[in-house]
Length: 170
Image (cartoon, rainbow, N blue to C red; front, side, top):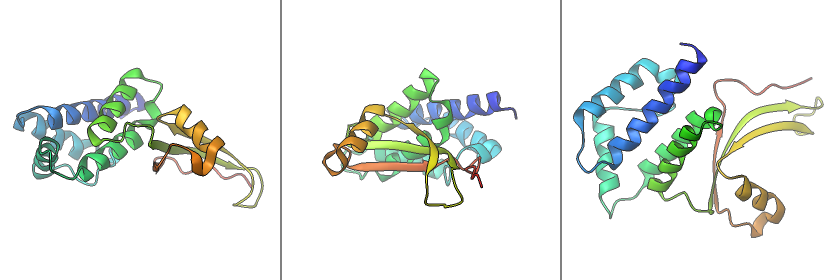
């Protein structure tokens, strides 16, 4: 699968997953299509599982006002991790925002960050480096850097680009 197709499949998967979870009635046909897509493209999607049972549990959790939102928070983290490379695409931004909304992590108190590239500038692994990050909110990141402990960010959802190992320069 080429990079363009991979991106489209991953985006479509998360778009359908969000729709399945938030629709009032659980749609078994959509769920089965997601399970099949996951099975065929698991290398591109970092969810630990995607079964009819897990999808039904996510749907139930979202519609139960007394439920803990751990599953939806995990889905928001995975969606951001898998879509971070597509953040220039407004549709990918929209899907990630929707997952943050359903997990309750769309406030300024959370920051989603993915380390995309790390290039060391010396042989010292704790020395200077050029770092490429993808974030869901530049203003929250800048506030965090400027203000440190006094920043509004309370929790950082971190992922690392696992498809490509960070490049270390010697």
